[in-house]
Length: 343
Image 1 (cartoon, rainbow, N blue to C red):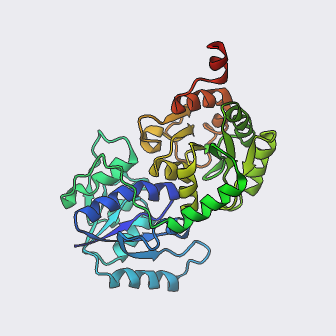
Image 2: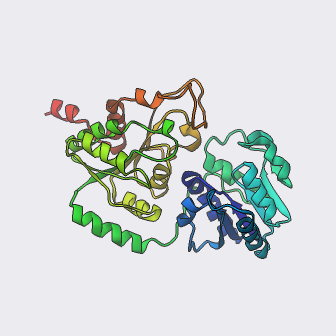
Image 3: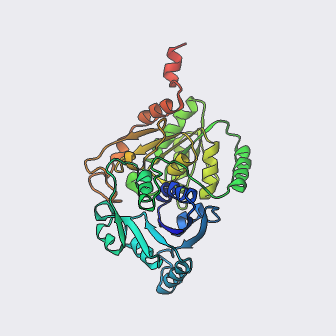
């Protein structure tokens, strides 16, 4: 049997769908995936996938490219297309795949509810599954697969990336370090850059260097964090998605908002402290019991609008001291003041 995963974006959402890929593979399904360019490196050359179909980017999108992608999908002769995204565009690609079964969640549980009209089969979302990983896994139940609770995140081979990151870290000679990732996603989910600089100073007091990671177009943001750190943080070398995953494996801790890098760090098992505001960490936050979340709860929560007058600025209400307390709890170490009091 052959299944197509339709999860086009974003990076974090693709990461959260990887356990479903693992469950399908364990149950002897051949699996393909259709994805937009930013998250494609997480899937390209993946041993669990028979095919990765690229969705044209918005800039490059045209009828000719769309037809070519549809022909690629139909040539694979999928038995079922699984719409994990719940949008018009994801449901449309699921139908264009030519699969005789097109399955997704019913209207109530979709981001764009009326897109359920494009499905051939709908499933109801169980009420007792708050995290999006388990929501994804529950969509496999009509296939006879019950993998809810699984947290296996298969990635493509990363030996080359791991060695490259190891060599670059050796050049920096940081010693124990934490990753601070100030960027990603829409602005109202992000914590101010200057606060990360204060955090780096607190981490230095705790014996940890800080390395500031950044993605395309975020170099200036990383420089602001480094400047605010007063010499306690360094700007990271450029990393691909898989290189970031390997960098996270070397780190003692990752601190970030609700962004792709945070979810990648969770996937590889690095200790994390998440900084949340409008989005709900119970749905898409860290899932390890030991990880920590610092949050301000806006009146509109949970809110997945990139621009919202109600939650605008709510992240600025989170003080660095709160995040440092969460770091101490996650790492299981006393704060510097507590350590001095015990002497």
